[in-house]
Length: 494
Image (cartoon, rainbow, N blue to C red):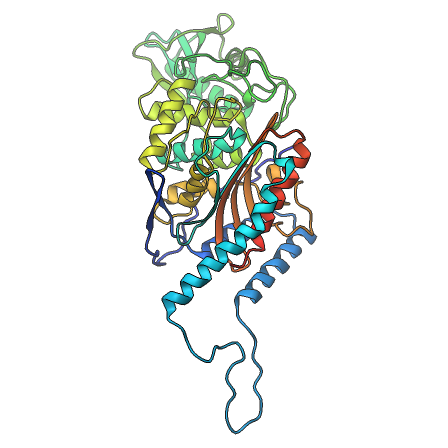
């Protein structure tokens, strides 16, 4: 089961000051041109290893990650040469007697690196555990080069890895500091109070209590007496039930809900859900209003906010950056669907499944990403109609590391850390090669398994990867095979 985010980052991690970004490259992908990022290997180490230090635990797991990092740095640092007493200095053992042209050396090294990576990944990708169809793309973030590809442009069902696309679109459209507002409005005649949902699925009793207190204070100041209470969910439209039907993995999608409609007090993972999330939130608000000294004439009823109503209380959600991190770390379906609808609203689309699909797709195109073959049927990845390519997911992750796109950084900081947090917390052990060096979003549906994220290789390079598999028969075996693929990247030294 996924773990919660204790203290999510509330702003993009772009603290390099005067660091000068390298030149960016454009690379063709079929008929599409994919503009990928040229980041820094230093950024890779900071993002992957720095997150481990923040995520804990602080004992053996962290020490293992630190030893691995030290080993990476030692391997990247070159040979150690000891001096010898001699009249004439001997040449360094690692230096060639004649220097070849730099371009030729670089080209030879790059080709050798690709060959070594292919030799390492191809047999692992051929594992029967990965089902009947599997695709893979690996991108060197610093150069924007696709260093490995197999079925790169084949549309696949991504499961929850589609949340990467949802999150990137929302951050691009709204910015990491955007907050979702839930408001209380008073009619011009001061007789009707309306609780208006803005689409914040993380609204909770504490927030409703604060809204009730602020509302009571405003009503006392205005001399209002007993009021009628209504609640407004009109910000969202279209079907409220996800295409998969009633399911413990997601509540009815509503502009007004508390605690994601959970009935068991949980904060993550599957849970029993209410059939009336908006009504339940309004009834809780009514009770809190009563405690605050506001008399309501009857139980809350659904309705639109009266024309000319004024706002008497407002609650703002956590920043979008924090919502994105929570959605990715815990694979939170309710937040993911809210992100898609917020993107739709910004684009002037209806806040529905269809509106979200159009808005998210348009935003990805605006970012210059290859959307050929993509179909974003929902924001969470629960819908099997979702289709993306490994090229799209790897390109998104590379773009999130681009210094020109600091607004996308929470896509990286929200990825679970192998062996430490979220849905990867129990998939790598303290002795696994990839522990602490891999950050990735998991995806699981019946017969579908996926993994997309970043890894730091033996030379300190940050690699973005996407591995998608369908036709799998054993989730445990498929996950183990995907984890082995990602771990192989941390040992790549080409």
